[in-house]
Length: 324
Image 1 (cartoon, rainbow, N blue to C red):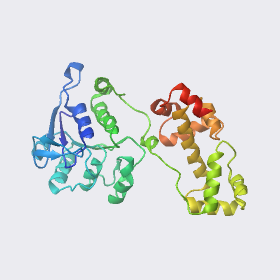
Image 2: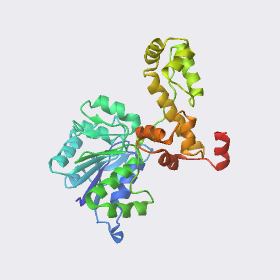
Image 3: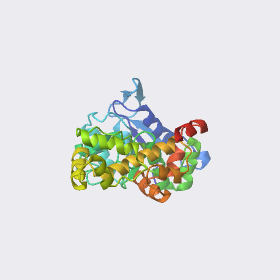
Image 4: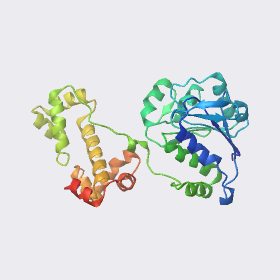
């Protein structure tokens, strides 16, 4: 169980992410049955530290204070902020003495620079997962999850996912009742289902092959119909074999995988913007049954109903107009 937490302030610190860390670990909630924690804000050079929002915060303590902390949290900062030996050394010492290091969003890049992601599962904001994997090839980057608990190293996805990761650490160390008490005071759920894949926008990519672009446009307009390879090939006036090869070359995916992705996107749109029953949504996008729709939503680490509760954003009149 941890008794002390240090938040590391680096240049271009993200204020919201730091605020989450301060709220989850730095507020005295002993009246609610939450154990007291010695919380501190540290920096390599104590004093003013610039944030990404254009203002500075005054950091009272140096890295030496964090050497005694049970948990060191690295909030988000610029992915290209230089990480010196002093910071990397601190993080490695925390791990060596059995402590925990938790990163928020792009804070994962600081952990990577310290070698803490080597051969470990981890994550960061979905916009930066490819760069994290490129920069630290030994890291096992999962772009779909809200956070990863790899024992002594916990990494979270972007922004609000930091709440999930921090509450998870409380739950892991002190139990669900303590984590729920903190969540209740913060007016957030103590645990969220799903992953960050459900938040990733995937617009229709452009293709250089005019014939395949024409087939794509037609398929998107007919998602509720039979879109087997043979059907699409007939529309393209090609043999199924030739069509499948040209489609994969032009689009980077097989016809079946491409159609499944478009149907999933359309289903998300209908769940967000209509009140149609899940069974009707499944039929509209060509999957016929709610069971098949739920199967495909597993790729987003969620369910259709959970997705709708999270993202539905229209009133009944707008929903009716869109569905019609």
